[in-house]
Amino acid sequence: MRGMQWKNGKLCINNYYLRMALIAVFACVYALMLFAWQISFPAQAAASNPTKAKNVIMIQTDHELSYLHGTEDDTYNILRPNYDEFRAESVDFVNAKSINPLCSPARRTMLTAVYPHEHGITTNSTGLAPNPNIDTIYDVLLENGFGAENIYFYGKTHWSGSLANDTPQTAYGVQGWSTVGYGQPYKTQKYKDYLADNNYFGSTEREPVMTLIGPPLYVNPALKEGDTFNIANMNIITGNYFGIMKAPKEFHEAFFLADMVNEQLEELAQADNDHPFVMSVNTWGPHHPYYPTQEYVDLYTDENGVIGGNIEEYPSFYDEFINKPEVYAWDQQAANNPNLSVPNEKTWEEFRKYMAIAYAQTTLVDDAIGTILDTIEATGLAEDTVVIWTNDHGDALGSHGGHADKECYMIEEILDINMTVRDPDFADLAGTVNTSYVNTADVPVTMLDVVDLAFPDDVAGMSLLDLIDESAQPREYMVCETNGHFTDTRARTVYYDGFKYTYYYGDIDELYDLENDKHEMNNLIYEPEMQGRIAVMKRMLREWQIEEKDNIPLVNL
Image (cartoon, rainbow, N blue to C red; front, side, top):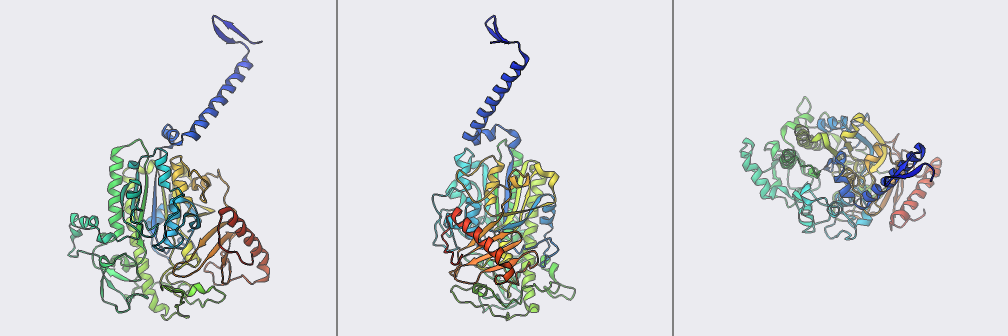
């Protein structure tokens, strides 16, 4: 062949252009072979690429009053200095929603990246079992050579009712500490040892006892202001009790949990392991009962000593449910019997002290998480660790008629969540916002993406990192679902173009302009000029149902 000849048993290529062409061909072949190897052996490929050996820590709070936090429309104005500082160092996804308004369905999605109707935990019922054919993030990690010794889970699970063996430690052999089901950390020996080892933080108290600031809301009506209530005596720590903890803040589960996590982070930093780690940190708070210490309550006490006296009335506190589904009137009862009075039996002047105690507990939890962030920074782990801070869902306290708690309705106070990502590779984007529609299912996909892994099957989630670097197209629209709680309520919510459409099976639908009606007081579902938009969003819901194999009956769609 012209330009090629054999000399002394070697092939010589004299033609410069031919030589360059052959080099390019061999380079392409090598690149294709390397790509095929990375697809076939993703864990080995990740291990061979030290620039991708980053750790990932996911921090999840529970049941948090976070709607519109830090925006000009923020009515809560809750002090969260550590989250605010973290957000200034991160990319903040401001259109983040919980895929479901309840703990267990949302938390199971946090494991699987699929919708509740697919993974099987559709409500908080303890009688449900998860779909065994759906992979969790731990299945993917372990099946791809990511050792259990490099996986950590701390805190609350509550992702599958009360299955005895469904904790990360018992089901997957990972590291850390957790409790079964909803859990009660204050009854554990680990907590008791923590207090004793720290000499009870100089206190004469021995358990987390609170003094009530008023009668509980809809639970235990025999109790009154001034009574004491011991959180350690509860079977699970839930219930609308509001008080001030007599012991130091370190008695709170959030500080107990943070102490464990900080100790583990220090050990990881000292070990200087070349292998990345994956960690999940899950507080029980600020979910009720609310029992902050006095120092946090003082932050929400006015100059006259009135607890909550400096908290302005929540915009939907006196909502009378005009053109609203019946489920709005359900609040803290175990039967299909709407019981929320319209208007609320309490005035805002009476109710705001309950809000103040909830605000104070939110600030306390923020303070505890701040110690974790400080440890990540002090140990040097921040340089190669992606941190995601989110919550499972919001809280309806004080909203839409003055609720004591969330329920299964699809209001923004419950569905809107924090979703903030700090990645050292995107330091130049610190303090920016991303307006893409994102949800709970995106968290496990992102965690796997950090360590160059992915779910083997199609899932509902996408990587937040791909949205940050714009390698993926944002969703045109997004759907969240509810399947009831104590009520037979099935609904699907579509977010699109600043509007929110919710289809309630067997009840009135809703449409809200979230740009101009952030507290959802004016249902536009019957407005003539909105019918075209409603038709588009109904079509989106039908498309989604086919794609996600959802079985909710779509009547008149």
